[in-house]
Image (cartoon, rainbow, N blue to C red):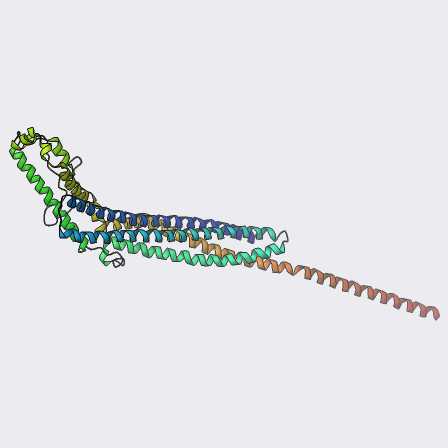
Length: 406
């Protein structure tokens, strides 16, 4: 009965350990996916930046506009592209290794637990059926598996503590990146050169849009042009030039819409001036290709500005860390804690079950000797009793013979 009760407890502890193992590895896989997506998003943002720079360079070359600044941008593009390639390569390599490690540990743990359950069942069946060799093999195998359970217990206990410390560090990083233990690994500060560059880009786009709107205001003051809309400026004024996307509601005209706005206008909208009379129409008096190229370049930079700002200011990393801390850390630690608690209970129960089995086997081995000893004792006692009877009969015969002679 004790062996049966311990076997039932072993089955229960194995189920708990399997549940914790599956939960831990599921959440570890989720954390790995979040980190991998963050690396890919950062890489895509860098490629968008280099693509926008190359687009501006091509536009300038098309219209024979050269500047020494392009030489510096060429080297910047090369550095950014190499960094993006390195980030992507490292992310793929590390995520592949982490995935292999997670899957291997899960498979080994569950396989060991399943093998142990099979060995325990064979052990319980083998002893009543007097299958001595099978029972001995199961005992030896169970001792080996129990040793592995203690090893797995240490691993999952380490993962539990490591996950806890990591989650605390991620939480500290969200509150204050510069004073966090991860600050040296992921440096984020408002004084980084990237923020200075973004400030200059924002100031430049802000001034360009202001100049366009100023020209539109001048045109509207001279002509009754109803189809000429002001361009929405998503940047605040000096000195911060902060990006304010809420300044541009849905449907507002952007700088990329300028070619479309110009195409809707004709010379009749401007009173049919001398230039229009000579050209025949406003559309033939404007170089739309040039306007399209420059406005598209500026709009492209404006489109990637939010992602670039998130990357440079580490908002992208902070958002992913917040996701990990808020949604993954708790289940991850609970899974690891359930796994090592189940393994601890299982290892202790297995050790006690094996000791009981060994003691029962040793006690059973003494019974045949005891039976043989009892038989020998009974035989010797019987022999001694027979010898005494024979001795008494011989003594009686001697007495009768003496009486007859007398």
